[in-house]
Image (cartoon, rainbow, N blue to C red):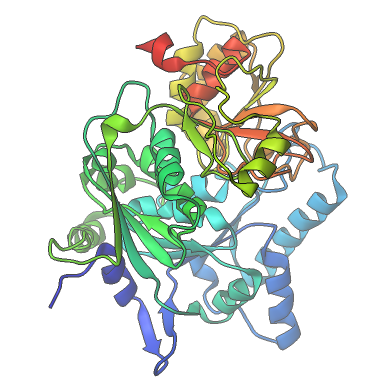
Length: 461
């Protein structure tokens, strides 16, 4: 019999029951919630008189609608204020832990859960948010769910699911200088497309992922959904164990040893077979930028926009006001955003600060830095990075999802370009008519200083 994949091992360990010739009932270890997708699910339980099954397995935070300026003041936007109020009331009513606005553990759900040690290898985790795949960096089956499924987990701590197929993406070799995890995943998506992962759960394998920090792995897994995959995973190893150990909610002493022994059994067996597999050479990857309106429309910063007949490409280029065959180098940019659940961890800001130190942002650029959590914000100050950024003219804001999806005041004006470290460049994603160019924190920092997209392969080698 063929060996098991990492995904198989975690999935099979959580199957409670199987419907004959149908879906399986999967137990969910951790349910993360925030203010946007939970209110309707709570209402559904109320209407049907169903209690929350395992409130102790649910963790809530406020992130999507939170302002990133003056968080100590009442929230101005009425819709946002109501959603945050509803979350507080629902959590209090059902005995759910909430890290609300102003709490020292508050932050973007996919940043604060890993940094608190809530995310651990071998778990199943869900959240009403598509980028829940971030947690797969720990060897966790983590995926986004819709409102009706949020209600299902509230009521039973389980989900009725059909097991996805398995996909493996291998990247081996030595990365060039200044190529970050964000570039690796943007490169992969540009090569395989935004639908290659549909119906699959993806495992990332090869020395490139093994050599990444946990923060880098989270960036990669975060964007699995952008290739259409249900989620992404990386096998837990010593890097994972070192990251988790000693965190607020990590296991301790005897329990730690017991868990560790189990976690070490999770990596994919040598003889396991995947339904689909891709392999890439690390040497081919360069700093990336997107030119279109989905994350698969990416090129090396030194490249040019593809010149091919494609109605979707034509539509995207019309929106972005770009032309086929054009290089993006020297394209003037007025907005830069470093933040989101993809790139708002301390490592991302260290990389950006390292580049920015002693320099000034260009006068034409609005450069927004939004830490992913209160703990990251605290680290920025402790490490003196806040001074580096403010001296360079960057605006350091308070934690939240911010300009990733324009659900608060952090919107990019119509027709303006924003080099963004977030995960999506859809039409209107960062504000109506806003034009988003996805890039790494290093590319974003370099753009802010130059006032235009710049070839960092030349600048920094």
